[in-house]
Length: 189
Length: 324
Image (cartoon, rainbow over all chains, first blue to last red; front, top):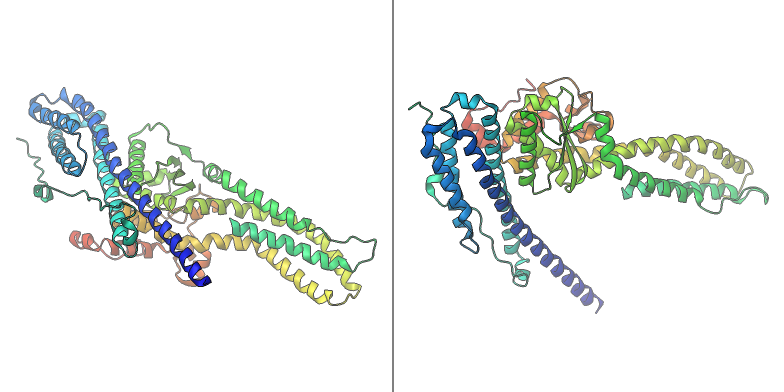
């Protein structure tokens, strides 16, 4: 009689613990996803400054500069939510990333521009921004993986339904071209 | 923390018990030790010392190294450091720590604070000049690993407690010498069973007093080595680039001079042993007990093992250049 009571108490405590664990991980996953947005916004805000600082010296590279501004405006406009959110956001942001990398390659052709302190600082800021976006995605993927694993492991699966736990999507590369090694052409043409 | 307080409680109430035994059979006008005030006083002292050490530990450690905080980055190097720390904070999922620079040419770094919400990371000027961006990031990742594991809370408090215990021991030693004479007088009275038991208890009690600072030191060291390996692993996890940390450690090991700014009390908080001690390089029991850090060669080998695939592609060397 007593044994049964103890077993029931232990089982209830375990259910509470598992449920709380799932809720905690779910919220951490949502937070990590929003962190990516924070870093993306930071990049959106940084780009006009960058373009302004190099515009004067790079008159001949009008098209490259305009491509960057255009990509940035597109990315800002994307206001997606729901299951398609990740795909839409990543498409826009990837376009912006490639425009930016083309710009940085072009900056290499202007040694005078590079010599000025401003550009070195901005290159560091851009590198840092890209790194932050990458780390935010990494954190999101790590947290989402933890969440998914916990949901799917036995015996927590029994509680998953009660906690309304749904598997989270990982941040993936959609466009296969992204997986190719980037070609950097620094020849003076 | 609780262990520390309990240890002092045992010391205090043990002393009370011994004194009670010693004075029960003394004459009716002599002092009878009934109320366990010794135990209470010592426990209270331990609690107050522990809380004080907990609260002020980080500031004391930072002050003792002469570090200055980076609030408004002035140079490119400082800007890069701030960016690197913020990037690692994102990857680790913790709040951004406060950043300090120690004006010492020897490369080293340490973390202190109470936990992820309130932490400090300090690097020496030497580290900033020796490491490139990736290596710096790996070192910061290691320190953030300590922060995330609450190692900083444990280590900082222990660092402050080691000092406090030594103070208390000195004070109590003088007091006990006076009281000891009371105990031996009772023994001379030839009391029944209390005599031998009293002697044993007294001996044990005095031994534990002598051992108290040693125990505190050992507590600090017992966790140090394992946690260093764990912090290395966490750095690899955050950066996804274990070879960067391996390369940084090789550079740090290569710079032979000990870090003079970081004193003994803060040694176990650093990424490399700032005192340059030789028994750090021993594996096994002796090293585990006395060294604050694992052997550098072992740490580098483990990290290179993690980065095996990439190392093979680059055609790098698996032998440790620091040991060669």
